[in-house]
Structures are given as structure tokens and as C-alpha cells.
Length: 217
Image (cartoon, rainbow, N blue to C red; front, side, top):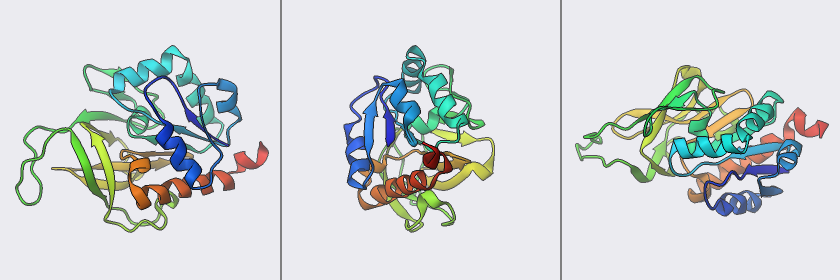
């Protein structure tokens, strides 16, 4: 079973449906016992970093996610869920993240331009490309240069370049997917990214099924 952490930040049924579409026993749940019992965990996030961080802490789900990560369970952060894996964000003030990955979250600069010189709007809303070397299992079967769907004004700046598994260019190159140990994060929305997103979710489900932690449950 893969638990999608429901901490009161919006309608996340599309993530649940996408995971079920690729064969997962996925459950959107705010039950700590179910989350602890899950073979893998998805941490979604929509809206502002501060509101998501507050929602986690009000329910003590910050400690629960840290517990899951320490236990070695595969954990996937999506959009703001990826940002929460880092130490802090500058969005509307300074807000503390989970600190599972070193680095911070910053805003796209105003006045950015693309390769043709066209001015880029903030937030980035729409399709953009994922560039990667093909070595990470989360991106298996996804061609470098494939398009995914993004909605965000802030992006992650990992302190360790080795944590970055895909980059995207939006006036500047930034980390659009990360991986360290049993932790993965994607800035884009795989549930809205058609075949590319479904392949990435299927890869995560397969990694969960192969995880030694899954075998012990």
C-alpha cells in the first residue's frame, strides 16, 4: 500500500487516481497508523510553502514523515511536497522545511527570458522539459527532453549537486527532480503530465514493491 499524506492542503484525489491507474493500492489518508503501515509514502503539496509546512506541523505529520524517511520507506514529494524536503523556503517570509535534504527554496527572478529572448512570467504554468542522464530509476523509460506539467513560482536550490536527477530551464536551469537514498522529489505534477507522469509514478510504485522495507511489512 502507498499512502498519500492528507494534511488538509487541498483536493489530492487526482494523485490517488493516477497511482491507482498504474496499479498501486494507493490511499489518500490522514490516519497516522495507515501512513506508518504503508510500504511507500507520497507527500503532495499545493499552494504556499508556509501553509503546507504549517498544515504538516499542526497534525504532527512533520515528525511522522521524518519517521517514515528514517525507516527507509520510499518517499516521493510532489510539487510543494518536494520543496518541503529541503531546509527552508523564502516564500512569503522564511519558513522551515523538513530538512531531509540540504538546500533552500527561492523565487524565480522577475524579468527572466527564454532562449529566444521572450520574457518569462512568474509563476511558471504549463509544460516544460526534463533533462536528465537516464541513470535514476525514477526516470527509467522517460526520454531526456520529455515534457511535464509545472505550476510554481519558487524552485529548489539543493546544496548537494549530486541530489539533482533532472533539471529544467525557466530563464535559468533549476532542479526539477531530486533523489537521495530512499527520498525522491519532483517539482512538476506527474498526475497532470500524461504518459510521462504516469511512467514516473509507475517507476515509483515498482521501486516501492522492490524495497526491503516492503518485504518486511
